[in-house]
Amino acid sequence: MTTNPIKVYTVVSKEVREDPDLFTNLEGVFSTYEKAQEYIDHFFGHAKYGYRSIVTTYLDPFNEEIQNNEFYYSISSQLVEQHLEVEICKTSFAVVLSEVGQLRIDPATSEKPLELSLHCFAASEEKAMEKFEKLAQDYAKEQQVQFQIRPFRVADSDQCY
Image 1: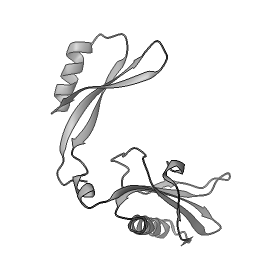
Image 2: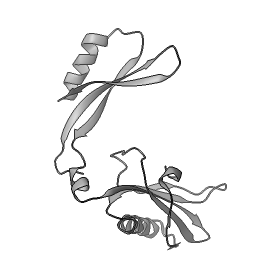
Image 3: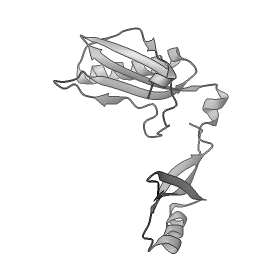
């Protein structure tokens, strides 16, 4: 992400219309959380319909990734018989800042295998896999689990979350 991005606070509203669709509207962008809250309190403190929330976001958050010609990848995997089966794709999944570059772990149960996933920016599938492999190996070491990572399969973006 861009070094030292400027944090802003957006007020979004959701309203149910007659045709039961839910609409989201961006109502304003504020320089502080307090100003966003003041806007909501002043104009809509007693509103009966719809609701508003404050969403923290950043101005120009991914300039470096764009300049470096990086793409947004989704990597998912399942542990099958001591082998990590891996699938990767360029994704249109929403960028969730708190999850970018963080290994997501869904533990094994009696009904499903261990699943590891990652959303990250990288210049290629290979570079994204390098990031995934390092995180997966760190996880294996911490948990004292042994597995081999099989060569990845590239999925179409419409089959990817």
